[in-house]
Image (cartoon, rainbow, N blue to C red; front, side, top):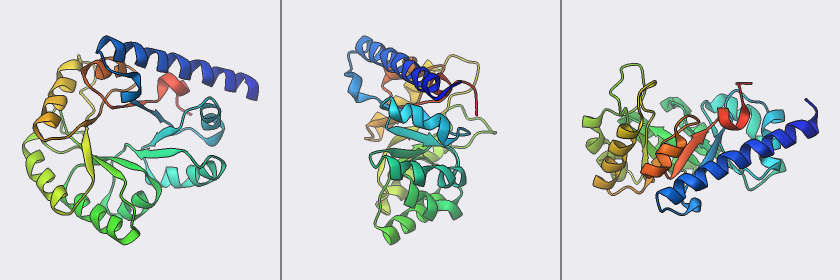
Length: 226
């Protein structure tokens, strides 16, 4: 594929996703601008990311601190207005690097990480937005805070002034996601949180109709993994 073909393809994919997002928001009587599209660029190199940047996408998501450190400093030198979100699991010993690099962290899920992030933010004078990841389907193999542990974790996060804006979840695979999205939305309301990071390539329209403020879309924008 030539550079021009790649650019055209990226623009078409981005326009299609944005149109679908706007339609879902309209059906839910929400403004389209109430939902942030996070283009999930994990496993994709700069040559695949640049066409989306050129097409107007400005918010990207990565799963791993080390991978992001290898790609994004150069891309951000070229485009100072980009925002980068960490959407994958975060080890406490990577908290300093994550705070330095990311504008939002979607995977806060335990007290030790809350403490590490608070220390890193105080030291660096940067305060990326934080989302508490909830293990909404109570799946042993997935990260995220257990539902029963969430109130105490939020108390701890607020005690150290962590900027928790909302909740994040990844519903169980191969089942209808709507009930899980609705549950996350209710839990967020009950805890006075307004942001909801939920919905991926296969279900972001459903998530938007249930109140998602951030959707994490990879395959629909990039195609297969790089």
